[in-house]
Amino acid sequence: MKAPERIVTQRLVLRRWRDNDVEAMVRLNGDPQVMRFFAHTVSPRETRARIAAASEAFETRGYAPWAVEAPGIASCIGVVGPARVSEDVPCAGAIELAWRLARPFWGKGYAPEAARAALRDLFERLAPEEVIAYTAALNAPSRRVMEKLGMSEDSKAAFDHAAFAPGDQLRPHLVYRIARVDFLHDPPGG
Image (cartoon, rainbow, N blue to C red; front, side):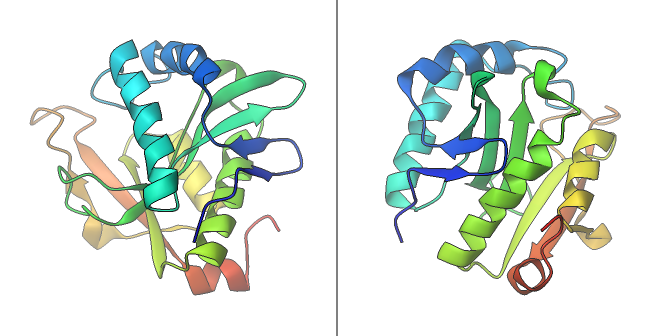
């Protein structure tokens, strides 16, 4: 089923990507503090490629990570939404919910608000049985978002991410899950 052009929440708009989002995402993906739980920052070229891939995925798969807009504040504050897990991790092929916001927008509840809306759209429109999220075990902020979304840690699915060298403190990763039936029956945060 075709993805909507946008999803509106109380404070945000999740929408398809525009050419003028590239600059904001290049800044976000190049910020070492934003990317501190990732293996590296993302180059401008790779950022453009990711935006193009997301735009294509909306058309071919019916879902992709959304550009997030805070109307009256900023036209692009980051990215939130579903993506297919890449082949380099044990949960490859699953649908993951991902988010990354620019620093000025941290601590305002935007990530769970946008993620909740993206989950609702995905579960209602495409009906996957479950969605996962994964992150470095040290990433307490993302783990809090996962918990606010009603996701539960799957301790049996924890893994060492190959993008990090053995002994790197970011190598241990945790996996969280939420079933469609649980989210739609009792959505966290309304």
